[in-house]
Image (cartoon, rainbow, N blue to C red; front, side, top):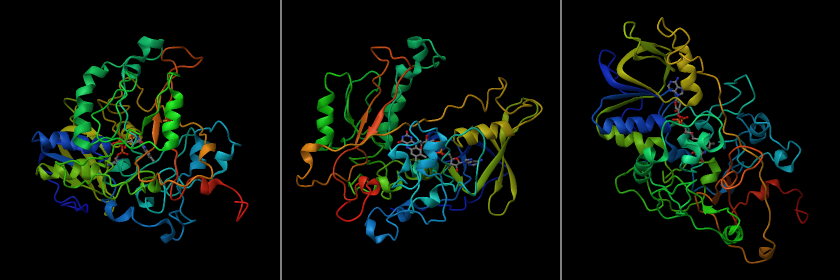
Length: 437
Ligand SMILES: Cc1cc2nc3c(=O)[nH]c(=O)nc-3n(C[C@H](O)[C@H](O)[C@H](O)COP(=O)(O)OP(=O)(O)OC[C@H]3O[C@@H](n4cnc5c(N)ncnc54)[C@H](O)[C@@H]3O)c2cc1C
């Protein structure tokens, strides 16, 4: 199914009318807002800075690695955040480890020749400040076009963490408030997983789980009795199919998911364009305008409330103002923050919604740590299996600071995978040539 947006250029935006809502950004958050509001009959304008791209055509999951001149790698002159830089910017704990020398088979975080048009080129669009890694996807659907598909639920260990360890603040909501919405999202978008009945990683409404490989099963069994659980990758992928969505297919296990980090040309993995935006368009209540970079939230001078947004067409450079009763910023954490800070007015002199002065501060990045790899000795020399074709391997949820206390706060989880792949990751990091290799 090709992604034929009814209005590739956004069609007519009515600059005179006041929309029920204008949404800025069409990724995970913007797509969901568009879907939820249009299904209730609201007239919604969705403004997206990037262009519409048809991932059904560009991700090539059926291409053999050897049919690509660089096995999927980007051209040498193309620059995006590489895995090395990603680790470096995050202050990788082991800068001299062999891992940090690997020039990564995905080339960059979120990058390959297939997905390069979906991710912002860091050289063309540099950023400064404290070291952090910022992968940007400026395209209809945002980062859902490349996400790694791991779809986990938060629990009261997250929402009420302060009550457990005394640090930070508890959220004003708890898991029981949000659980029915998680359920609805799982059923609407599809998620694969295996129930484990853990209160710190609640189960979802799962479709068929991915099958653990021999080594993964071995690891799962070896963790028993250690208060650690290895569960099949909880993937935001429909493995059984979705009768209500004609744009998405169930996963056929074609096994090219990691070629683009994420991204799925048959849309078994959730992406906002096929999962949310196209269905929202079918209601007749949604106008999507790509190429529309919002630069300010406008404010009603009397009430001080948001009255709409100003945006610039990134091709013609022409500016427009559009009115709406509700303004939803879903331009990703950092871009939404920037927009709030840019939206200064008499009533909001240091940016909209910034009475506290905290907007743009206290940013906490998604920190990634080191990785380990190993071989299963008993499988060396045995007949190969083919364990590809799964949207992920396994996940080991947090096990620190649950029953016992460590000398640090809270915890971390592990993503991993084991098995024989058609093009194993180790092939890229193993040194030598010929027999030595
Ligand atoms: C490589 C990679 C792997 C990931 N893997 C996982 C995973 O396995 N599991 C998981 O839970 N999460 C994962 N994530 C994170 C996940 O993709 C994001 O958390 C999620 O997409 C954020 O949604 P969002 O709507 O806030 O932003 P986005 O999805 O980034 O969407 C924001 C949209 O706003 C648009 N925009 C920005 N500025 C403007 C503007 N001024 N005007 C108009 N439009 C604008 C952008 O072009 C973009 O389309 C991954 C991310 C990356 C990069």
